Image (cartoon, rainbow, N blue to C red; front, side, top):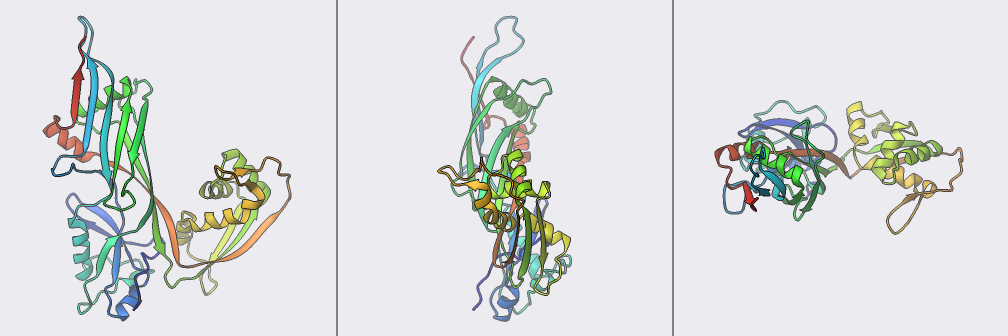
Amino acid sequence: MPDPAGPLFGPDALVLSSGAPTFDVRVFPDARNAELAAAEQPTRYYFQAVTVFLAHRDGGPELDFSMNALAKRPRPGAPAVEYLGGTCTFATTLALPESVPTDVLDKIIRHDHPDPPARIAHLFNYRPTAPTPDVVPVPITRNTVSCTAAHTRASSRDITLTAQYSAAGSIEIHGHNTFLVSCDAAATEEIVRSLRDASAPPLSVTNTLIEQFDTGAASLTIELQIDLDRLYAACIADSSVVAAAVYRAGQAANAIRHQITDAAGHPIDAALSEWLDHSDALPATVFGMVAGDLFDSGPNGPTLKTDRAPSGSMLRQSSRLCGQISAQQTLTAEFDDLRAAVKHDIGPYLTVLDIGI
């Protein structure tokens, strides 16, 4: 019996509007749905994470967000409370409301959706006599999270934040990232102000996801040509030593050229080629080709060679691409629920500790 392989690679997805509020959910078919259907096995569909949400506290409806501020009462004649610093804790999740996957499944079963793009249409193949399909999240193999500050007022001084987070379970769509943010006086004032004004907190949380796909029956051939001297100069200029950065620097410097063809020898379309440019396949292949010529290995990872002389070398390689492949998606946090929550009751989300004059 065939096993599911994973979502079919590439930019094509069926976009379904679902939930309240409405989310435009990108749905990918399993790369082996044709084989699964022929074997009378459940076909499978994958929905992609849409945004980053504040999580809810355990055992209750309240959002998992809390700001604790230290403040001095204003001295006689002073214009306002003086904030000394504080800490902010919150948790985020990628999980969509539970009703969304259920709605996606219902629309697939009833074929209540627009026509899928031609490249994937044959894999949206549910029949009324077939087993109920599976609807699961797109697999996430890595999740890099960052938290930064934003000014709410043009006149604000620089804001200093020290953010630590626990990524336990974060590579699952239902996993939580828990943040502890240490704030100086300026950051504390900004966060307290934005909460009391019921605007978004002056924090930006970004998740960079590495998602796993599969090429299915497709087999692609990649012809690569690399100008080593030009790529080395580009890496020096950008301090690039990891595969993705080396590839981007090489592209920008026109040091890397490639042609990708399908099994019949025809060039793939521009949209699929661009998607592959943002996958891990091309950067990893390029880095493997040039690592020995441009980099030294060390205990802390690769470093650019310091004594490399120009060689005039041009590397060429033909490689086959099939099977599992990963691509990157970047999502930012959504704090709309917090605005509504603090308007209703700010108490659970803000504590100001008065230490006197």
